[in-house]
Length: 187
Image 1 (cartoon, rainbow, N blue to C red):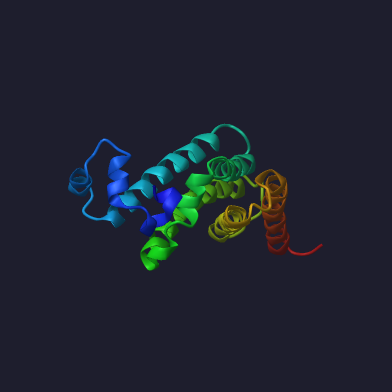
Image 2: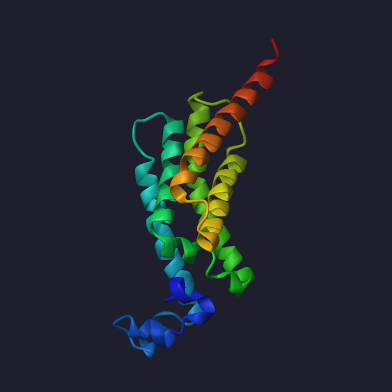
């Protein structure tokens, strides 16, 4: 309901009708519509983050695992348009409360990307760089592409995916190489 109608458009009566709970049962578990909405966001984000962690784990080089995290977020949200709509746009009418929650959820995703980039720096796959900023840039790029796609249908996720990966992965590598060069001095 929230994904289709937005926060204000979805009625608790409709949510109850789509579940095995009564309206009173929903309010027994969730004291407000906002707490229900945020519980839905948390559950979806937990599942997405677990998937990103799983898909970006393993023995591959750390930068490749960071790329796997990027690919997983982008592909999961483009394959599940309703999920993307829910996580990215359907709560904006709530104002600051949604922004805080969205910031928290994206911060958790950025943490996974940051940890992979930290590993790449530690293993000298890339030069030193501010992995906190780099992970936010990665998620910001994904966010903007997906919001535009949700509202306009363009660019197609398939068309954007390879350029997104190239810009972010090669850009991160280049930023690290530039930092390494500056630290080591110019030849």
